[in-house]
Image (tube, rainbow, N blue to C red; front, side, top):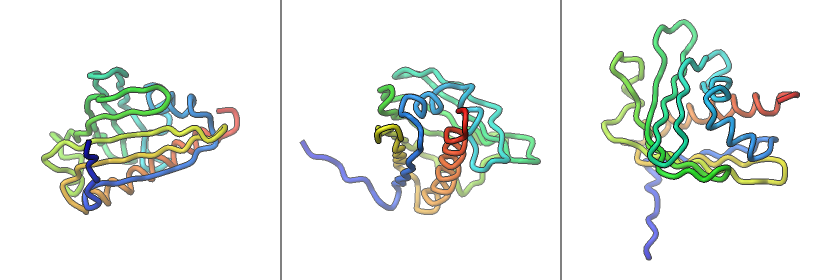
Amino acid sequence: MTQQTPDLETTLRVTKTIAAPRDLVFKAWTEPERLKQWWGVEANFSAPIAEVDLRVGGKYRLGMLAPGESAPYVVGGVFQEVRPPEKLVYTWNWEHSDGSVPDSMLGSQETLVTVEFLDKGGSTEVVVTHENHPDRHSRDEHSKGWNGCLTQLTTLLERPGS
């Protein structure tokens, strides 16, 4: 069996270790009320949309709202693999009917996200692999977004009393 090598030009890989147990990190990633607490590229963003049907073939829809904006950035897709609390694989499609997503982030093609939650003895290493970007620019713009979101997730889960 031949294993495909990801195209480094169009594949993004972001890793972050969070001082929280894997089960908690997975729940924060998959439960709508918890997603609304951190889904955003910066602390001043809000997350008015968080819909998750956590099963293979189930759909999700997430929206983040920038300060002073009237419409959120909305992404959605379908779960391809769901292995609590280890791994998620899902498609990624920006909704842009209202023009809220910059053209630099859009592509006509669907992309694929794989999120791995690796148990590190009380901490969790989150590995996000986002594949099939139309070009390097899109990949780099998504890198900023994923790094920002992971920072917000870390802040939430490492806060005392989380």
